Image (cartoon, rainbow, N blue to C red; front, side, top):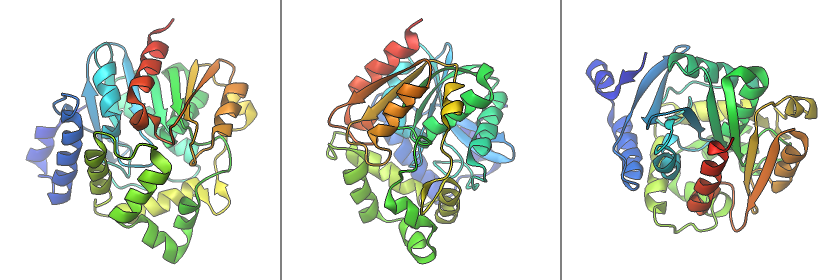
Length: 310
């Protein structure tokens, strides 16, 4: 059963860092006119925070391996006009529990997705995922297709070995500890070179503050480093979908990719579009790994059209 934020606070007041994350998350939401609406549920012993807006057929927005749910602020505002939009902070991120992802990664995230949907009483939902969130969506569609409607996969993981050197080094003892510790300079460099082309967009300062605050959560560096070790090693991504697995996806799939994505190169997108039976691809020009920040209007238009089509 969903627990409201007020009930959580009565049971256990958030610490200073959680208050800081909540503040920066709420600031992003306010920028598109949204008051905070969300709560907490328990999924297999993990505390999961989520945002919840609108009414209608449910759609889950699944963030990647960055900050948390509020990165979807511009998509929430648009999609919630006609749909119920549920946006979780995955374990390790946002305001959710610092719980390491265990191998094999696809099975771990499918268990998480199933548990989350069960506790929120969602039988079937459309899934929109970014990066690792898109990998979660596709893995869920492969293992429990009856729970998944349409899938929008933005810069999806799981389609090739390629992975940024930065993440590969996270598994190296000394370098890894330096990489995952809170570091505003490092975060800003990654943001400018890997996530977006326009790093001075209107909400960039608020976005970066939220992304930084999330890294301050107690235990985050350790759980982040261990989880990266589950996902990748120095050779690249560990869990890559086979052609057979991709062909098994029954859901309609819209792949959205930035033409300058250096995290998961656009060649991964062409593989997805070629192998998944009911897939189409839209490559966004002048964008990197997070096109929903570089081109929110274009991404929103694509998502609304895809999710509302027959």
